[in-house]
Image 1 (cartoon, rainbow, N blue to C red):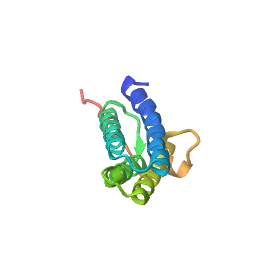
Image 2 (cartoon, rainbow, N blue to C red):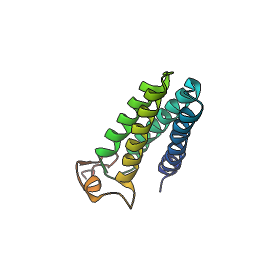
Image 3 (cartoon, rainbow, N blue to C red):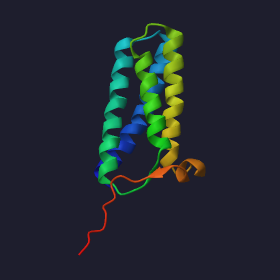
Length: 130
């Protein structure tokens, strides 16, 4: 497995914990916009690492993975600057579900529908003619 893919996977797992931490902090102590914005930017970084990884691996992936990830990023940024407790908890909770769904696309425990539908491959090299 390439180092980029390994970094993307492990960093993504850490981000799930951070998103959950933002939800818990918002529920117990109220919204903390600085923490919320930091977590949103960290998810952006993992998104960029994932896009770069896509070009260096020849492994086909399902369109569901980037769709779920981009949906989560949008929700994280929608709630990142908010001081409204309900909005922060709602946006980050739905984003957490979408990030877990994005993870399930490539996980062994994920549904087969996500793994075999709408597949594409970017990093594959075409055969060279002699």
